[in-house]
Length: 243
Image (cartoon, rainbow, N blue to C red; front, side, top):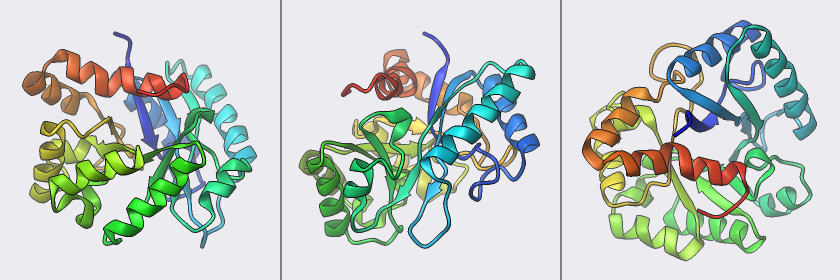
């Protein structure tokens, strides 16, 4: 097995509430490498009510950061993406390539407000799927109307064809007991497809760390399950193929 792949990260500097400088971004990449993360999809926020980096701007900044990481001998490969707050017309914008998918694949990282209605989330993800994209629901443990019943969570995946991502820090309890409980339950139920860092800083809860979580998953669920979630499923994104 090669190193792990982080599909949700805010390392790209000075484009959202993630890395505040190039120096911080390089520190985050160095930490990621120490955590055995080999590849990172950069997913700056994309929100309708904010000025956001363009697809071209993300690619340009990524190439600059990749060059600097190479000079610093940091062995992490970067890929472009977005974390998109869902809005009306999103599928059309994706089709027109005005917003980035994950690593130029058909996978799309989508978030909602934590209290959003279940039916709204279901219909939104279904619409994205109907346009030929494969939605990944970011940090699913946050959506109270999805996770308050496991049958609803399973139904959402079945009805829309979406995938679930949880944050590594939630699994190991860094976001508190409630987030840990629901994230682990989703994992036990076999509903989690990806675990990512959602890193925003080099230190603290939102740091680019996966190792402790990967070890926890391997210890309790076996090496095969751990490798699938941290390596093989993310590799499918990079290869633009279904899991």
